[in-house]
Image (cartoon, rainbow, N blue to C red; front, side):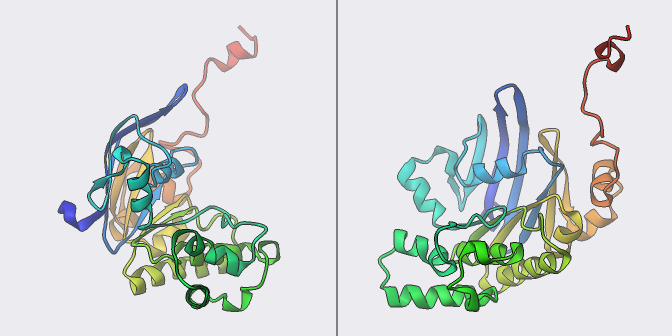
Length: 267
């Protein structure tokens, strides 16, 4: 796919935390207008990759481009400018606990724009209506269910009309009905608003229902990728284990260690 067709490009990214190498040459591309999944076992670096795309972390080497701009080489002012193109839905919603639903969605408009209050009010109500929660505008986050908090987070993510939205584990901790509601909203908003969506998840059942293309990350690299229909038919050992939830396979049940008998003092 031509570079101009991709809104995000990750090229040979390497990154390590002290004492732990996380990425050993990750490369992927997010095409415009699509819902793309990034999947992998817990601890594989999915959320870390989102933080790098958003410029919160910088890779040790490699390039990350958003709309043709290399984000890990930008200064503070340019980084903030590029971030205006990005919406983010955090795990558990990430709402400000002391602000109402309305104020949560309005917050960034008041911080980043000079729009009159009357226009901010109209936009907030429009965004809340898009996720079915206009009637919850006066509620506090503590009064929301888990699914409602995610929907408010989604409303906040689209408040500034971004061209890219990133979702960090949007299905975790939700009941089946809420999972279905959130999944449908991600798909519908992406298509109706002309967005590009990146969904990070370990919930294969829910994610594969809404995404167009998926990348699997393991052992610091992209180990498999392809259109959703092909992935469902894949015989790749990692993909097969992951989407079926097998307890053992390429992702081993036991973390590698020394001799068990020796550690127990048996020899």
